[in-house]
Each structure stands twice: as structure tokens, then as C-alpha cells.
Image (cartoon, rainbow, N blue to C red; front, side, top):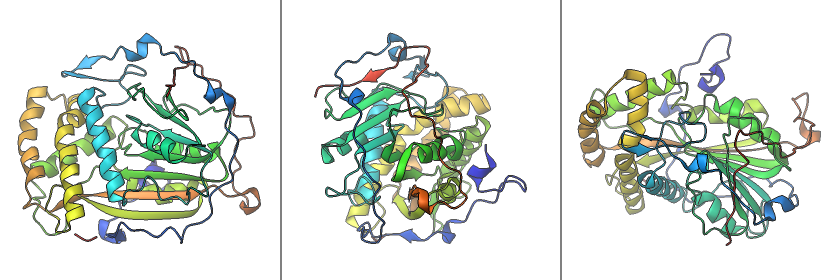
Length: 386
């Protein structure tokens, strides 16, 4: 794992993870947008993405099976979680819970109907729900969404385009973007800072915005109702250790703000929200969100665990399932007041006259040069209080 993703300076080793009490948690989802800066300048959409022609190699849809689940075929093994129908339903629920936590907002960056982003990139889009909703919201914008798996629906707005891509590779696009977005990508990257944040900075127009909505794999409790040595805490610790061993760390969202600033973003804003687990919260809105999130976790337990714990610790599926019985019980127990920290961070790429001695973005043109073994896969369709 890159020291920078741990908040370290590289020379002295990684810094200790910041304590949650050091973060300013937000409990009111009605966040004012007036305090935010101006959006970046818009660009014309490339006609390439207006094409209706599309093809997908059979190889990327030939999903390998393991542990009774299917997994992505493109760059098989680089992502430890399944992509089958059950996982797709879970991903949709997860996205809806995060949106609800944000007060039914898709983003906190300073865009609006009067100041829309003209070109949008959604990295690791999953089932594509965020990209589709953005396409509905900004009908004149062009949205590109990428993922390792072609699991997105066919009935999407005509301005939304899905591609099979490994975003850890160098990015090459025919134009730059006004807005780049990630959500819930813990465990996807060896180094979010170098593979994603830096590339997002380079791929943005000056004045464009990058926003990450990320949840660290860390289940917290402030009142002692969660046993720190119990099954859930043990499971979380095992996932963290396994993810580090497989060089896909699960804890880095707490360093997002520092990462954004290191790669050159300015006007960086951060909101740290508590995502309650199950219905223990007094507030009815948070109670509903909590039940959504506990369902998300319970439905995802096996998928989260199988490949990670098998590869890192050589545990069998039976051993893993036995260990998850009490975790499921904990997650549904309203006597346990647990939550997960969600970090929403957004920052602006400075204009050239605002950069003083900082590294400039590459000057080479953003040409569509995908050198995949298979053809470029272009999937386009017709169409607060706790």
C-alpha cells in the first residue's frame, strides 16, 4: 500500500490513522450549497459518444464462478467482490442509502440546473445507477461511466454511455471533464491517490470538480454497545488485514481530503457523516437509512468475505459462513448502536493562473487509445440527529 494513502510522508512511514473524534461529523443532511465555489467551465461533448453502435466481447460476459457466485471476467481476480444478480441488487441499495444520507442529493459539488457539468465521468460505476440519475438530471450533459463488469441496465438515458475498463490503467479520453465522481470503492485500488485522484486531476478541465463519496470498512460505536472483541469487530479487522495483504486496502477514505490537496485540488471540502447500522437511531429518517444499510451489509457479507478471507487466510467457505452467523445477528441487533463513517470530499482543479509552482497536467492530447486485448467495449443503449 502506498504510504500516501495512509497519510504518511513516505520517508517516516505511514502515520497513525486519525481518530474518529478528530473529525467534525455532520448530522444534518440539509447541507447548504451557498458556501461552495463556482463550477468549472463546460466543454462540448465529443460526437464519438453520440454513436448508437456498440459491441461487447463475449469474453467479458463469460463471468467465472467461485464460491457459488460470479465475478468479473475482464482483468479477472483484480476485484474481490461478486457481480451476480444478488450483488447488483445490493449495489443499488447501497447507492440509494448513500444518496439518502446526503439528503437525497447525488453530489455536493457546486453544480445545478443553471450551472450544469457538461462532461461527467463516473469511475467504477457498478450498476450505473448514479450515472443514470445524473443523465436524467442533466439531459444536455454527456456522462461516461466505467467498470470492470458490463452489469448496467440497457434502458438508460441517451446521454449515458457505459464502458468496460480497468481504471487503474492510464486514462485516455478524447476530452477532459467538468465533473468526475467515485462512490463506495473501498477495496478497489492499490493506491486511490495515484491511480484515481491524480488521474482525475489530469482528466479535468481547469475549474472542474472531483468528488468522492466513500465509506471506510470500519464499524464504530460511541457508547460501548458494540463489543470491541466480538464477532463483528473481529470480522472487520479480518477484512482490513486481508485487504492489505492483497494490496487492495479497505481503509483510506479518512485520508481523502489530504490526498485531494496533495495532488493539487483547491477549495477542498469534506463532510463526515455517520451511516447508522439498523434501526437504532431515534430520528425516523436515519432509522430508515440504518435499516437500508444493515440490509446492504447483511446481503453483502458473504460476497465481501469469500475471496478476501480465502486468499489471505485460506479459509474455506464453510469456515467463513460459520464465522458470519454472529456478525449477521449483531448487524440486526438494535441494542448495538453502531455506524460506519462516510467521507464526502470534493475539490476543484485550479485555473492555470492559480497554480504557483504546482505540477501541470500532461500536455498530450486526450486521444481515445484503448489497447485492450479485446476490443473497446462500448455499451450504449437507446434509449440529524442520532
